[in-house]
Amino acid sequence: MKIERPEIPSSLSQESALPEGESIEACCLTGLDLRGRDFYSGEFRGCILRKCCLAECDLRRAAFMDVVLDHCDLSGAKMEDAVFCRCRLTDCRLTGAEGIHMLLRQVTLTDCRADWINLSESKLDHVRWERCALQEAAFTQVQLRQAELSACDLTRATFHLTPMKGMDMRDDCLDGLTIGLNDLRGMVVTSAQAAALAVLLGLVIKD
Image (cartoon, rainbow, N blue to C red; front, side):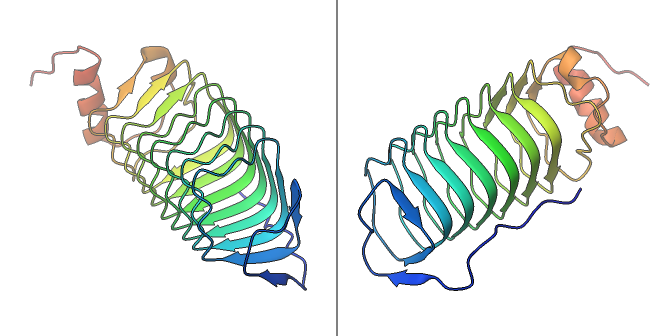
């Protein structure tokens, strides 16, 4: 699956403080502590954020368009109805983020920690998760269109009303996964994973 790269302007302004205004464009923000700030309906366009703290921020209805987030902290952020389009997140923390009704399109997340993230009723379109920690994450009524989970830890994650047909989960950790039978249909797993999932679904396996 090919994912479009963020379109970052060749010339970015280097900012030591958050620029004023609801739209933040064509800038590089490094090391800013923005914990708890209100970015409701705000926009980040063509930006690079490095080692910035956005923990517990109000990012509801915010838009991240062509943005790179590198070693950023978004834990506990409120991200309902937020949009991420052509974004790359690397070594970011999204623990406990509330991402209900989010739209992720053309997004790559690599080596991110997203345990307890809630992505219920979100849309994931051309999204790749690589080596991410997704323990106890909630995927309820999520629309998956061209999505990949590669070498991710999904221990005790929940998939409900989220069809997984065609999803290759062979190199993911599925320990304690909660998933419905209808969601499970067509998911690609190893024989060992299949046996573990069968037990979770109430089957008794005997040789």
